[in-house]
Image (cartoon, rainbow, N blue to C red; front, side, top):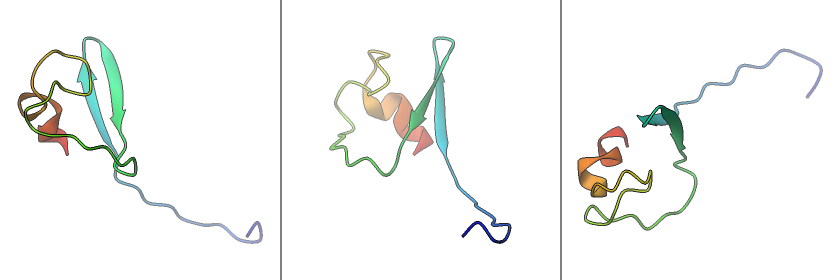
Length: 54
């Protein structure tokens, strides 16, 4: 409101892969299955890679 201080709390998920950080945005509606290639581009199956961070 611009008249008083506000507090914002957030839980975010990040994945570190090949010296890069990737943000996993839970607000984006993605149809990700455990058997598809991982969304981070590692070449592994999603369940063996970034699924552990969700």
